[in-house]
Each structure stands twice: as structure tokens, then as C-alpha cells.
Image (cartoon, rainbow, N blue to C red):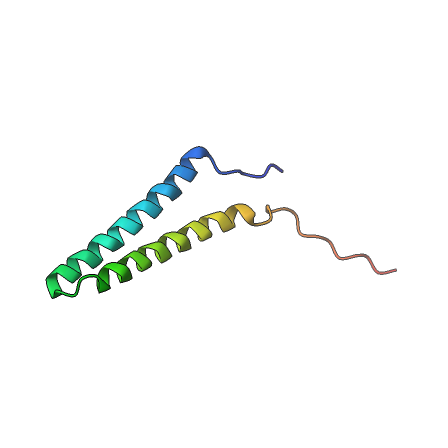
Length: 80
């Protein structure tokens, strides 16, 4: 049974998703700060939320490659 390895496009997807979530969280935080006049509180909150979201998605994707490949379940030993 062959194990599946990530392709270069899947690594690019992870990098792009992390960049978009970081920039999106920062932009939303900056916009909220501008609206409320509280610069830079929500900017930092948005950046942290973007980093956390990107890290969570990345970890979920990596776990699929670290898992044991599916195979037949082991048979219990026969009793004499």
C-alpha cells in the first residue's frame, strides 16, 4: 500500500491560506479600529485571530499526512 505525500501545490495552498488569513484578520481589525477610533487594539486581535486560524487549518491538513495509512485490521492471536 503506498503512502500519499503532499504535492508542491498543497504546500502552496497552505502558504496562501496562511497569508490570506493573516492579512484578512489584520484588515478587519484595522477597519474596526478605524471605525471605533481604538487603534491598534483590534488590529492586534485580528492578526492573532488570523494566525490562529491559519495555524489550525495547517495543523489539520498536516495531521492527514501523519496518520497511519489505512490497512487491514490486525487479527487477534488464536487461542490454543
